[in-house]
Image 1 (cartoon, rainbow, N blue to C red):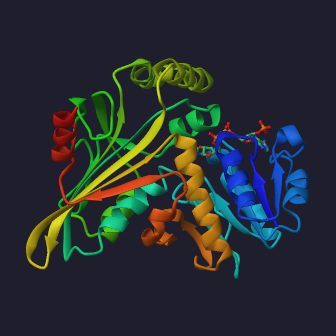
Image 2: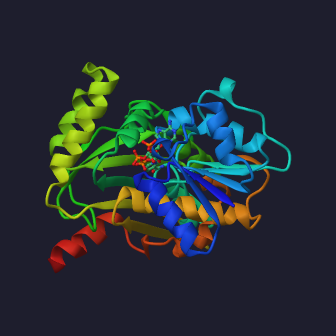
Length: 338
Ligand SMILES: NC(=O)c1ccc[n+]([C@@H]2O[C@H](COP(=O)([O-])OP(=O)(O)OC[C@H]3O[C@@H](n4cnc5c(N)ncnc54)[C@H](OP(=O)(O)O)[C@@H]3O)[C@@H](O)[C@H]2O)c1
């Protein structure tokens, strides 16, 4: 039996439906159905007898470690749509022998770390990476809280094989392939980016999150002056205003350059889903299936480091295209077509 916590949420409801449609026996829980993860007895009762616990309850920065500890103690494996194993090392429970836990099985972090790993095979040497990630979608309060609690460093990048602060400035009026309007790209570096840089032996890496020049950008800029609860409300309201009447999307773009058999080479991957929750749920389900099939090693891991990048094409509802052209050229070709 698979116990899905946060099963009434944007991500959890999709994960539950996907697991049920594959014939798995599931148990769904959230406060609405009488399960409160802050009550240890309630949580222990919910995970009792589960082979796998999938945590989609948020905000994950506050729930992930707690749910994992109870799941592993009950003898279940664990998959989390969010969470970040790189934070608060002192509060980490020890790995439990024989058990597997996979964190950050979402869009970003998650697919954002898998996509560059899927492009790397074939390169003799990877030199540079440029990545853009963004959504036009509603913010759930849980998602907004996790966004605000993220351990990202604005303006930092990977240069000459090292982390460098204040390396990149924001880019305005940027046209990217598959996006209906120009965007503003905000550079950042997080622990997932650093692990990609180290795994691929990058010389330079630059990661941006993009937003349209709208209400959400203004709300992000006002965050530093606001108390946490007001900042969450402001992000949720602003995102809802920006998407009113529009088609939602979640889009990731990654470009690698380097050499293939002594020849300069370039590859770009574009991943797209109808919403952030859809993209996240697809990765969470892939992680759950990998754990159930014994394809993830024992111990506690980030999804991008243990899922097989070769299986990306099987993510439900995520369209992935790979091109041997730079992002800039793909955007120009689309502009020409329009
Ligand atoms: N990595 C990524 O790219 C990514 C993207 C999107 C989301 N996420 C993460 O996925 C998680 C879910 O996001 P979402 O957008 O689906 O949020 P959501 O729609 O607000 O859903 C949250 C779920 O958690 C449940 N919940 C909240 N507090 C609970 C508690 N104390 N005990 C039990 N259940 C509780 C809620 O139900 P009740 O209110 O009934 O309890 C609801 O089912 C968040 O942590 C978010 O950060 C990750």
